[in-house]
Image (cartoon, rainbow, N blue to C red; front, side):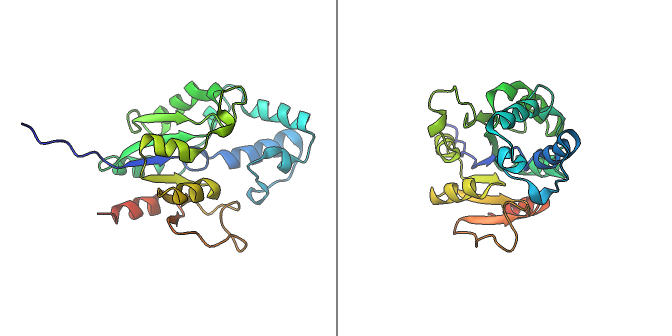
Length: 209
């Protein structure tokens, strides 16, 4: 009888501002098309609050930013590909993203182009922003992490990292962005560590036996 194959631990990886530079694109686009003078310090996850416009206008602009081809033009985060190629030797890598289903294929194409085919064993879309998706309003990333058996999460949003850690999933808060660091940022709770870039992420996992 052959020996059983030991299951490798799963790392769940966010896309936007972890693999793909979303915030810099949105800032530059807003400045060029709508006359702002934003810097990255002005970026907010809820774009309407950043733009300070009506709900109707915010929805129109958001639709423009989610039009075909836009998210596919995001630039990759430095060294993400190299670090993930290294990590896949010891871990199973799964994308868990809040992106809309409407950019499903565009996202897969982007990952193949900038990260490489076969690096991720699975790509999961949470449906958080898909209002027409049944149960989408109740879906959280932590629910998905539990369902796929993830042991680790790499994400730039503190709320997802804190939720994961509360569910006994080790969380790596990625980047030193205005929305997740700075003088006013609270101390990280147990189970959450910060990695400022992909070199630091690789070093963190290299230190795990």
